[in-house]
Length: 169
Image (tube, rainbow, N blue to C red; front, side, top):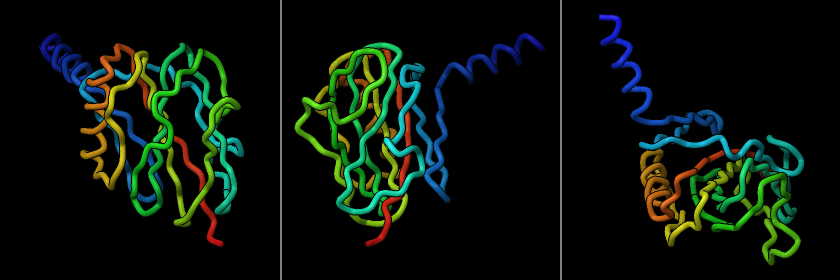
């Protein structure tokens, strides 16, 4: 009986990986049917997680990777709108401040005011042509993430979330 319970517990544990993230009042989870790796060891705004930025200010992100790979950044606005503002930028292992000096992008804060979440999505291979844009339910975002991972053919993948606040004018 103990062995059957152990095998059942092991099967359930290995069948999916669940990461629960908290975007404020509502819990938001990422549930995928394959394992996430612990490649992203640090991901936060340059002023620290939970910092306040005003519209028009530039935000930078500090990210630390255990191994080289490709990173996409996905924002989830306070109103639920989701969009990708960096797609598949290659980064060596180590700590980086994004945007990198050679990148043309600047990350300028815009309304609406409230809690801004940003997810870093890591793959060990170049991502395909799947982008994040729209308003997603938790399941809708997770479905899009699965497709993103599938099209990249990545063997190593990770997701990490941070947040900051956008102040009203």
